[in-house]
Amino acid sequence: MTAAPYDAIVLGAGAAGLMCAAVAGQRGRRVLLLDHADAIGKKILISGGGRCNFTNIHTAPDRYISANPHFAKSALARYTPADFLALVEAHGIAWHEKTLGQLFCDGSAKQIVAMLMEEAAKGGVTILHGQPVHEVVHGADGFGVTFGERRFTAPALVVATGGPSIPKMGATGFAYDLARRFGLKVVEPRPALVPLTLGGDDLLFRELSGVAAPVEARAGNAAFREAALFTHRGLSGPAILQVSSYWQRGDPVTIDFLPDAAPGWLVEAKRARPRATLASTLAPLLPARLAQTLADRLALPGELAAQTDRKLVDAEGRLKRWAFHPNGTEGFAKAEVTVGGIATAGLSSQTMMAKSVPGLYAVGEAVDVTGWLGGYNFQWAWASGYAAGQAL
Image (tube, rainbow, N blue to C red):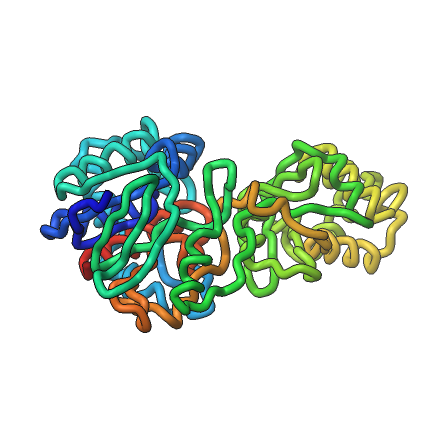
């Protein structure tokens, strides 16, 4: 059965796909939005603990990772956090700001999905879901998509199917396979915003599972000051998830356990409390189990008075740049997003259209643009979806 043609077919009813379809539909385009999942916006629904961290007020291009760090500038400038917040408020959705500029719904992420569905309805968007995409072809009549038992055609096709992170939600590498078929390059995808696993000499720290502390974590030139969490497999928590996007296999992750400590603080502690031990000195500053483990690893037994100033300065240095050597990550199953994706070199930063395939667009996580933790990836979804929706 061949359905009536549309102006555009959008594959993927996630954040970017919904935004793109709604914007194009409200511009008078006849849009068909297709998704293989049994529900619309599944990743939106689980985000932010079910409250959807829908944007970040500190959004800026330097908070995104891409082979081309300039690519995101155009879209982010043309659809800002303030623009999305205005839409949220127009729909009467109550929100609040948490730490570091993160904006959440007071109620439920379901409100964001409902809002996007309503915006799509205003644009007359046809939404079909719950069937697989069997085939995508490109010919004289534009793009043909076989969805379930039906075939649809349109002169424009938008790839908004995301990356392979969280496969239990139905995520796949479909976007990359499709891009390669059309001759577009793909930057090798890897898990991002993902817990790191430890082995070898770091195995001891897995015994601290459940212990968290505010730290500054660093991988390469990237540093984040938030909480780190020890797990039964390694390291997690916001600071670790952030640096995981920058971490390269074989490199260390360094942690400053006392980022507010002034140089020489341990020597000063010896002067003030010479009979104290290193463990008892660390105890008021860190969770007890962590303090004891660090003291044990630093191997400065007895009272502080028994230690030379040199040894104490060395201990300070270790606590400031404690090197962990992750042996991997917990993979796409636990990754919130994906680093890599459809190469931006083949896309227009203004419209998100493929330079070599007129009418083919890619938006959201499918593209090689990955934001920090805390609402940045949603803002990229809204901005890139808006850019494509305006161009269709």
